[in-house]
Image (cartoon, rainbow, N blue to C red; front, side, top):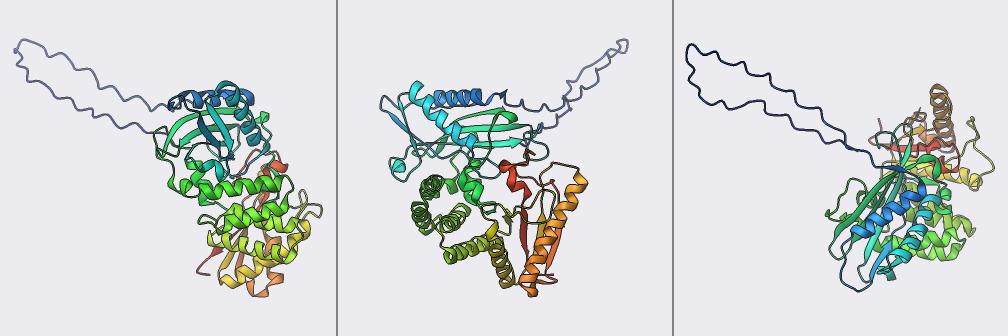
Amino acid sequence: MALALLGALDGCVANDTIENSPREAVAPQPAAQAPAPPQAPALPALVSFDEAVVRTTHAVFTSAPSVGADPITVVIDPLIDGASGYQSRATQSIQDRIMAIVKQEFPHYSVQRLTPDSLRQQPRVLVGTFTPVNAQMKTTGARESYWFCLVMLDLKSGKIIARSVVRVRIAEADATPTATFSDSPAWVEDPNIQAYVANCQGSKVGDVINPTYVEGLATAALISEAEEAYDQGHYSEALTLYTTARKSPAGDQLRVYNGLYLALFKLGRTERASAAFRELVDYGFRRQRLAVKFLFRPGSVRLAADGAFSASYDSWLRQIAAQALASQACLQITGHTSPVGPAAINDNLSLLRAEYIQTRLEEDKPGLKHRTVASGVGSRENIIGTGRDDASDVLDRRVELKPINPCS
């Protein structure tokens, strides 16, 4: 978080005109005091996971303005990791606990899940981010805690009406992604997720709700239902919901493309799944960045053979190569690792993995030779950054593809 800088003090003082007698000594003036150094804002309290949920829930629902005796509907838009946009066991646990607390202690509220129907009455909406951060509350370097931000939005007034922030001890949260996000093959910085996060991080009570978030809320409701269906193994239902979301005005977004591919893959519709992955790659190239979760064997440049989607890696590489060739752009291929192990080894390993993907793409499409460049950054650009080296931070062991246009 950016720290506010104190303005420089003026140091000039207007002097009154004083007539001094020749015999009177003029008293020496004290030296000007140097301005005090700027004080960093106090960090949010560091508490246990359970206390964090109780504290933020009470703070938000107590401070939100009341509107008479009628019940108030509040809809929970699923909480996410503010860096990746992922939902996890931790964020789901927070939502379930919030609903239980509100039902027991704030009976004038009716808490509902996000659906197209629940949005009809322009309810209040609860959003939140649960993000691993370092000691300076930044998503870089070694993560030391989770920054938990909970915000209530009022769709009728278009304003943020309540907000609470705490930090959570990093060892107490299970950040394993839900099935949808664990299975999602690709990641891109998506404007819709960034709009969600903007309502929570860097906001304050009284601010206007991010307009991109409001415009995409109906689509977000469809996506939320689709993700729930996928997590429950209802793949046909998930496919219908993702397809409907894709047709909506805000349907051009990462979660939709990932979801269409996943549902089609699970249903065994190979050709349509391949076409859906091609659209996913195209979306990433249009966004100038596509991170693909190729799982490598530990400490190796060989792709893992036991992952749920390992049999699809050849197809993924063909689709990426075809899209890169068709785009007439060069391709920068960057390998990443989690922070486990010596930095020098991670740098070398990330480069070797990028070069492996580079070789596979050029073998599939020889026209890409001399149009790709491979590099490795080790763990210096981690998105999750917890260093757990398990299912919770797979995204940190990604390979990123960035079109370079014009090609030079």
